[in-house]
Amino acid sequence: MNRYIVAHSPDADDLFMYYAIVFGWVNTPFDFQNIALDIQTLNEYALQKRYPITAISFGVYPFIAQDYALLSTGVSFGEGYGPKLIKKKGKILKKHFKVALSGQHTSNALLFRLKYPNAKIIYKNFLDIQKSVLEGEVDAGVLIHEEILNFDPSLEVETHLWDIWLELAQADLPLPLGGMAISRNLPLIKALKCEEILTKAVQIATKYKKLLSSMLLERSLVRVDSQDLETYLNLYANQSSIKLSPIQYQAIDKLFELGYNANIYPQIIQAQDCILPQEYLEFRYN
View 1 (tube, one colour):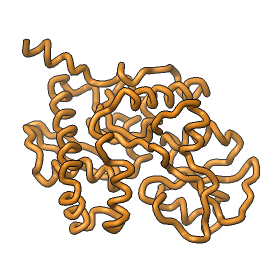
View 2 (tube, rainbow, N blue to C red):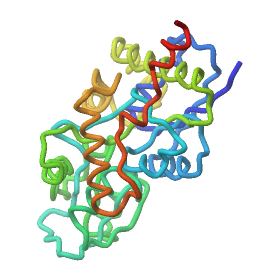
View 3 (cartoon, rainbow, N blue to C red):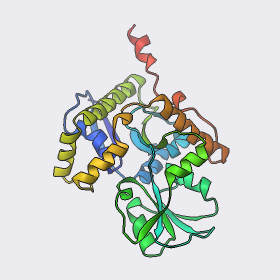
View 4 (cartoon, rainbow, N blue to C red):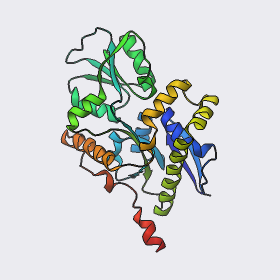
């Protein structure tokens, strides 16, 4: 049996989209072993080609496109929502304000740098960002994942990354946040089978959302209560997470274009050129 490590974040949406496999709800010829790490660590390990299948920020993908194909499933987008730039209530942010971001290669860091080129950035684990703002280590911070749902009442939102995205994209497109990538070293037929299994996991999770959510809560696998879990999954793990849509491809391409135009990415790429070729199966078996 082939054994593959699937690396994902410990956030509720990633757990939700993967754990149908852990719970044995998806038939698979492979032995999947999962590991949970924060998103910037996942991005850094993807740059090192450490795991064959990994969750990533879309913001890192142009740097790893030669080594990883994009998977068309397990994606998270914001649609009218997303990460939040927060500060202490009443604080005026100056031009060179100090900010904590969740990692250099995250999608939110890319957008933030384009909007605030003069800000002084430090990088923190996303769970430590609110604390850094409260203790005055930084003037502001970008909250991601479940942290956007509830934060200290002494803090307020300076701006939503969704609004920055709309301004920069100049189009009404969903905000690309996270997806999955698979090593190009895997044999294509096995890579396609892995994608099929992971897609099935997201399909089953969304179909049996209530049951899967309760199992995650009972096992203390998520950091939120049942109400916040419901809210969070509605945002980031839903029907639009199952398979990339045409408008989602457009949004990813726009993110890559913005990064390329800002000289952050070495080349401009198109998302659809980076996915696994499904037509291979038709040619192979016909």
